[in-house]
Image 1 (cartoon, rainbow, N blue to C red):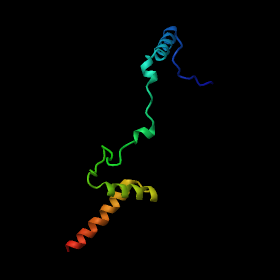
Image 2 (cartoon, rainbow, N blue to C red; image 1 turned 30 degrees about the horizontal axis):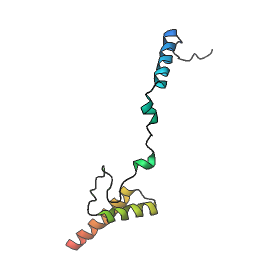
Image 3 (cartoon, rainbow, N blue to C red; image 1 turned 135 degrees about the vertical axis):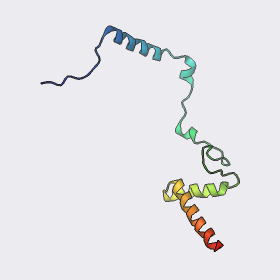
Length: 100
């Protein structure tokens, strides 16, 4: 016994709706066609002094530290959050040992 696929029936109304949708997609205004689409490189473009706006760490005044973390992360192929957490753990251990 053959398995019947569960496809919608090809009714004239359905075909007309598909054609209408396709025509509407083709008839976009010229200004939207001319607008360049953002590229991945453009998304990452920031000036040297500003970090990501969504970062949980505010790097203002510590840009060199941010850059050191990013460089180490790239060179060792660790995610930046792992590098920051490890550095924080080492720093906290040192601070706690100094206070005893």
